[in-house]
Amino acid sequence: MIGASFFSYIVEKARIIVLKSLCEILKNNRKIELFMSIVLLVSVTTIACNMEKVIEHKDSENVTVKAKNGKIVVIDPGHGGADPGKVGTNGAKEKDVNLSIGKSLKEVLEDKGFEVVMTRTEDVVLGSSSKFSKIGDLNKRCEIVNSAYEKNNNCIMISLHQNSFVQESVHGAQTFYFQRSEKSKVLGESVQEELNKSINTEKEKKAKPNDSYYILINSQCPGIIVECGFLSNYEEAGKLIDKKYQKELAEILCKGISNYFDKE
Image (tube, rainbow, N blue to C red; front, top):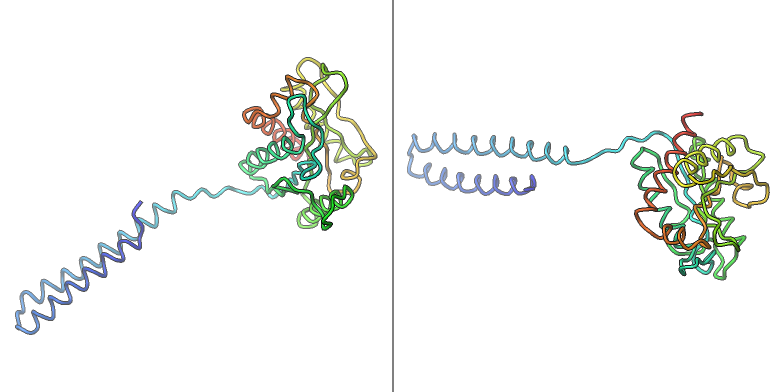
């Protein structure tokens, strides 16, 4: 689309041409031509100014302002950097799967009006130490979560992980919540319900209480860990690295999150 600045340039050029003509006319004292030139200058200026307004209006129509719903979701893609997490039967690293699903979930949530904070957006270990420190990494994640909660108490945390088991046949998605937090329980059950509808269709899983996961204990806001699937199951590991499936999973998680807030 041609911008308003282009028309400003045309206006200025037109003015210069007409003004030069006016000078010539004044020198020769040609009254009729003087009058017509003034009319022309006014007309060009008026048309161009109105055209600028039209262009600005059209430009503004192309800007989509997404309404915010006043709720924050902190997405925590587990592991990263020197901490790969589990490695799938297909060679997929948990840290990469977590991050990819996290980015997809971010897009889906933002489309629904949620404000999203991510503990990491790259393949990195968090924390200030130059050497890998699991506790330093977890402390930084909790710091990000709690900072978002202090900004807005209408906030939850969802930590994304992948599961693994010695028996390859085991599969499915499951949530874990801090057992001493009623709101975390409601969140875990809301998300688990949606996971059971779409993923655990053969056999439902229950949201599990937990009192040992560091990020659940040390996050001030309601939070859950979601084990999105089993990298030890060849078929499920293949799905978990598929972008389309990741988007479907993100939409399922978003629905569970929305249901939780609707109950608040």
